[in-house]
Image (tube, rainbow, N blue to C red):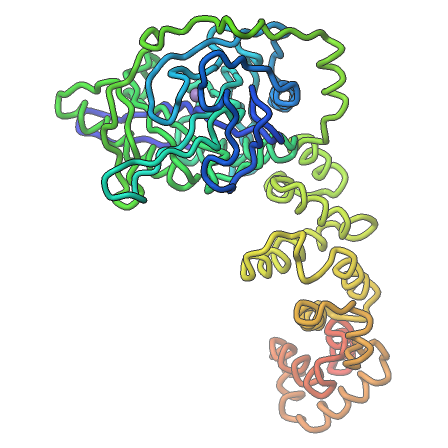
Length: 485
Ligand code: MN
C-alpha cells in the first residue's frame, strides 16, 4: 500500500508513530485503593493520595503490574524484571501532586511487535518501542460554570499503560489498522476495555514527512488525545499535508503539540513541544524499584488466551478460510467464538458466508454485539444442517433466517409450521414439469431449436408451480432430461 503526497518539488512520504494511553482494567487505582470505575458522581472516588495530600505515600497495585506484564507478553515484548517509577514534573490544575508518577528510562516493558492485517490479506510488522505504567490525571470541566472551571479527581491516579510504537507506520490507514489491532489484543487479554468514547483508550499521533527515498527523520508534531480511529486517520492525513505545504513553500516545521478539531477536520497549535528535560524526571523516592522474577512472568504467561494472530492462523488451517476472512472474524473474540460454534463439524466456508454477511448485517442494522444476536450460533448451525441435507434450498434458508431473526425460534419448527420443506421428490417435480411443458409448446420448440438460454425461464416456471419449494438443482436436472430433443 503506497501513500505518497505529491508536491511541486517531488514526492513525500509520511512517517507516523503512535502513543496510546490504555486504561488498565482494575478495581482500584495504581497507587491507592480508590475505585477506578467510570461514570461515578464527581469526586466520589478520591483518596488522599489521589488528591495529592502532603505526606501520603503511594502503594503499588500488584494487579496493575500483572496487567502490564500480561499486555507486554501479548505484544511479544521484552519484560523488564526491574523497572523504576519516576516523577514527571509539570503543573496542571487537575493534577494536584504537581507531578505524575510515570516510568522514564526503565519501563516495565521494552521492545515488542504488533502485526497489521492488511486489506489485501498480507501483513506488516510494526515495532513497539516500550510500554510503561503511569497514573492518569483528573479532569477539568470548562463548560459547566460561567466563570470557573470545575475539577473532577475521580480519574486522578487511575492506572494507564502508555504503549509507544516505533515510527514504522507509513499511511493514515495503517495507523487505523494498528489502533484496531492493538485494541483487539488488549480486549483479548482483558487488560483494557478499549472504549475510546469513555477515554479508556486515547491516542497521540507523531507525524512527520520526508522526501521519498530519504531515510532521515524530520521534525515531528504530536497530535494529542484523538478519541476515535477515524479521527486519528483524518488528523494524520491533514497534518502530513500541512507539513508538505510548509516545506514546499520554503518554511520549517516547529516541533509542537497540536490538537485535532474534528468539526473542521484540521489540527492547530496547542503548545510548543516540551523536551524530556523540561519535566525534570527523577526516580520517585516514595517507591522502590519494581522487581519480579522469571516465575512471576511464567505464571502470567500460562494464563494468556489464544491471541488474534494465533487464532487467525488456526482458522486458516482448520477451516480453510482466506487470510482476510480469518482476520475479520478473529478481530473480535466473541465473533470468533460464534463462528467456531457454527463452523465446527460443518462446511466452514458456508458458515463464514452466513456469519460474515447475514449475521453481521443484522447486528449492524440493530447496532448490537454478537452476544446479543437474535439468532444464536446453535440455531444458525441447525439452519446450515437443513441446507446440507437438502431440506432447504439456500433461497428458502434465507426466508427461514428472516423468521428466525423476528421470532428467535429454531429453524426446524419454522420449517415444520410453515410447510417450507424443499421438494426433493422427483415425482412431484416431474408432475410440475409436465404441466409447464404441456402449457408452453412454443417455448419447448424454441429450446429444442437451440435457444438453450431459456432454461432459466423453465426453472422459474417450475419453481412458481411448486410455490418456490422445488429443489432448484433437481429442477434443472429433470428439465434438461425432459426437454432434450
Ligand atoms: Mn503518558
